[in-house]
Image (cartoon, rainbow, N blue to C red):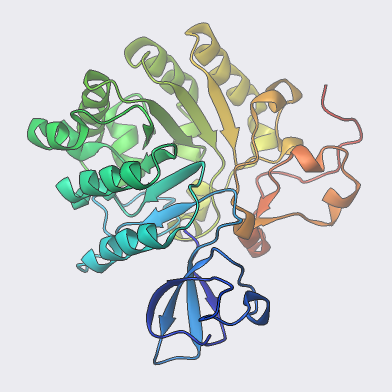
Length: 342
């Protein structure tokens, strides 16, 4: 979630504003790192502005809460217990300030379902303001097992909303360990079945850490047999930040050494005709057979390339590395590719 701090106080009053070149605002070119259409919050107590929405970004997201009912081993944004309802208030205000419809926008946390019916209010508000915008809700899905909440959130929800739900094992002892929440597997499956009942598109997300890789083939087979309705499965390299750094021995893996597992798991998905993508994975760490499924998934402000990438023939097609790879954490040996994509 991007919340860029810019060390300059513009000629705006406190609150949330959309940067604009007009008679009331100074030229945006006078503001370091800001551009027309950016939505910023001005803190009157400090010489700074906080960028809440960058119009030029490829990926857009609104942070709704930092609270969560999971405590995943590799969580990139560790949850906090405090009441942070102000974040949802801010999301509504940012929505009102966005001047042009983004192709898509993510709603993230923490766990957005903890907002309850207020999440539906935000989904409806986005639909009313930007009816063409696709909405992606990143959620663990657990609370959707409650029929009353599922009905309040999902009944009549249009297909322009999709749900990105993580699943880390074919059984509770794996999934519950990864998310550090007893009973989470059963609740997640119940939530996925609720999404199916209401006709909601689902992308399952699988973060490739050690406990998950150990059961990846079985997990892909479980998905094919029990969750054939999912629209897509995303296999994702771990982001080296947050709890992942505290659990490095479980979360840091060399994907180049996992080629047999990745190939076997994806063959299971293909056998059941379930589409898949690979995210956050540099092409040089993947089997070439899987390159067509790899996408440029790392947000611009997190994305970096290293010296080896300068000589790579497929750099423009590659997602690169998370900026925090500077901790010494890379998803395998990075090396330039001499031939292009076929």
